[in-house]
Image 1 (cartoon, protein in one colour):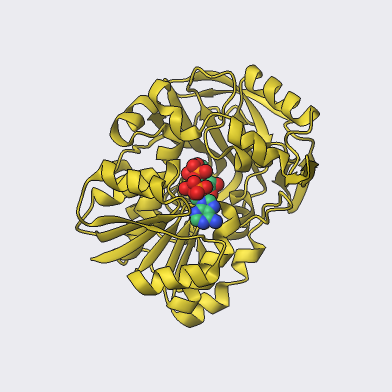
Image 2 (cartoon, helix red, strand yellow; image 1 turned 90 degrees about the vertical axis):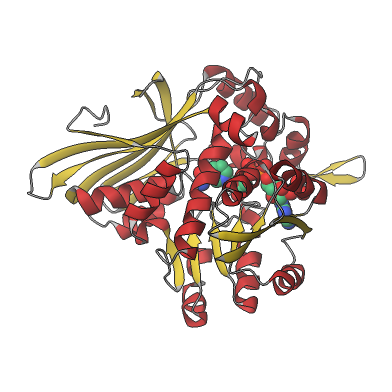
Length: 399
Ligand code: NDP
């Protein structure tokens, strides 16, 4: 049906490539391109299909991207490089007439700042070019937004509170490691927390608010309030929501390491002079921490991510609702060689691409995932390794 280019050959890119290759009826040709060619070659070799090939690109460079797109003429680019590359890739898409999908919103390299304004500013240009951009199509952001859209479509007349709950109940046996790119991950969780309440954003200290939540098949875990990018688009697209929050679990050992990393200045993202060479401490730290892609072999347990929503049902009666997916690290690793955090991001990215290529999610402009029909997407993730479950009128543990 169509050719796609996947940019980024990390944990997520590897899963996206495996999953696209499993659907040759949709993804007739797949190119995986990144800065380090050897990583792309390794993915191509592991998949071992003639319609999957590797290429090289520095996605910080619009001319290099334009050259790559003109050479391959893809219908869609799946951007699973780092959030820093979102805008250059979108620029190249506009120049070459290529549709766009990503899993994380743009961040400038020198400030850890998460907001959609930079990417939403491309809306009119994508509309005028007749091109579709699908933003934030991983798990969270991604499935979290589609779960919310599904709840609004089928069950609620008014959603009043939304809590996205993200638990990694797995154990990789390392003293400290991050589950995806350490630089991006540590920038995210060392920021102030923020949530939405009655039309305003309330700021908290980093990881200041926490409580114990119970996750299906995992049990009780301490969960910390973080700011997460999908809150921004969800409160805009579902204006009945009065309060929106995001929670993520962390173990004590992880938090102790994180505190030490911050206290000794290793989470800094500004340049320091080291023997006449400029280095960014957090980037140096990334080089010595375990590579998230290598955690899979000894990873046990499950992730459990979902949405807990309260409001009024279609008849105006009070309703509470929980929709979630659990994903086993071992099962994800057996299938793709990657752990569940990469898997739960890569499967939705492939399914979003499939929605676009099969005509179900085509909308010129720049769109967050909750702006599309949730039904075919949720059917696709369930059929491709991420089954989901629902419970009604239960105690959400979140007042
Ligand atoms: P990795 O660090 O494992 O991989 C990133 C890849 O991008 C590497 O192959 C890297 O290449 C490549 N890359 C980096 N800079 C460039 C560049 N300038 N040009 C070309 N390629 C580049 O990250 P992950 O796979 O863990 O994460 C990928 C994305 O997924 C991130 O944006 C992350 O924020 C997002 N994510 C989203 C989640 C969600 O649920 N929505 C959850 C988890 C991740 P090289 O090896 O040469 O550095």
